[in-house]
Image 1: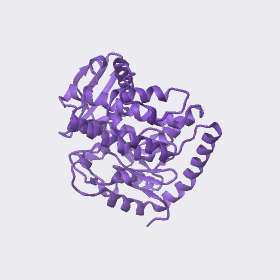
Image 2: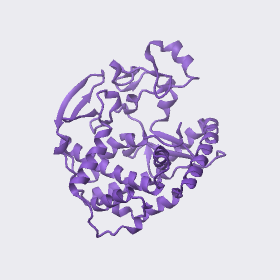
Image 3: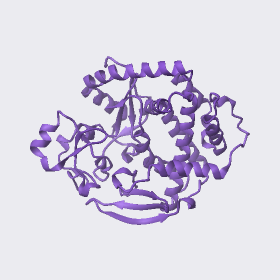
Image 4: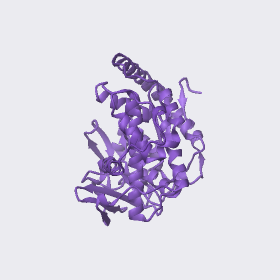
Amino acid sequence: MPGFEVYMTTLSGWRYDCSDRCGLCCLCQPEILPDEAPFFRRNHSKQIVRKSTPHKHLALALKKGRGSCVLLDGRRCSIYSDRPHFCSMFPFHFHVGERLSVELDLSCRMVWEKGGVPAEEEARRLISLNEDRIKETLKQSRKVYREFRSNCEAAGVWRGPEELRAQVRSRLDGFKDLSFLGQVMLMANDDLEADLSTIDGRDADYNAEEMEEAAREAALVSMESEDPVNVPVYCGPDWSWNLYMSSPKGVEWKVLDDDGDLHHRGFVSAEQVGLLPLTPDGEQELLRYISILNERDSIMGNAYQLVDMYGYADHLSNVYLGMLAVTVVDLLWRASMLSHFHGYSMDAKGIREAIIFYDMDRLDAPTVGAFI
């Protein structure tokens, strides 16, 4: 066992395998670590590029600057045994904060297939390969977390993360209800500290049109880019790479092919996409996902980052609970958009497809702590 705390609760029951039909991870343009650079400069000098953001580093080039990795051939990695560290880690995300939290990227379609090895088993193998780096990063991240808590306590906005998670667990069923979500969002914007126990489930103090607008706005923010590299990708059941790019006119659906070319498939005005009602099994799939989000340290770290960004003016409770509520309405709008383009229902299958579309974005959110 490693000499540090490892949190893998969200991996329970999941299994992991890989498919040569997918290639989703090959769209992510992995960074080449300093100790990997000599190999790639020596063997693949024409397949690497220099990047300046978010810091200066080398990365594998993309086909036509926007497609998959140039080393992907027919959805198979041509250097699989020598692929970069970042590639070998996918779909696992190692979040280092006060402890190591191993989280599974549910945008990887293969984790839903129930085949392969248990996710916890694979995570332990990866931990053993990266133990020294994890220990070194933990020294730095724990110091940052202590400083963050001290700042929160000085400002009077601190609330323990387990207490916040317990609040969500106790009212989890409410998160499938738009009225409840509206009340959480209103409470999050109040000066008083948010407390889910004060919400009356019978209260309908929300405006349906305002909720749709909030959901639409949250979802469209991540799609507002003319650069295909910066918009979310949805790997469909047919293994197609689907991109959805928003503009003031609406959302355009494009498919990215294996050569890096984009093909128009559809368009919808954003106002035409309304929040569709969930079926009972769709509600249960949604609640299962919210339970996973509530246990992820990266989600809590994202709330910490927002509190710090706002200058410790807002209660941590308000930021965390409000962020979760916005996450849910964002997901529901995306599910409704996928329904428009692909004909899905808002049942368990439709919500699962929306999670596959959404989860990579959720894991990419800025956080206090570090992903390694």
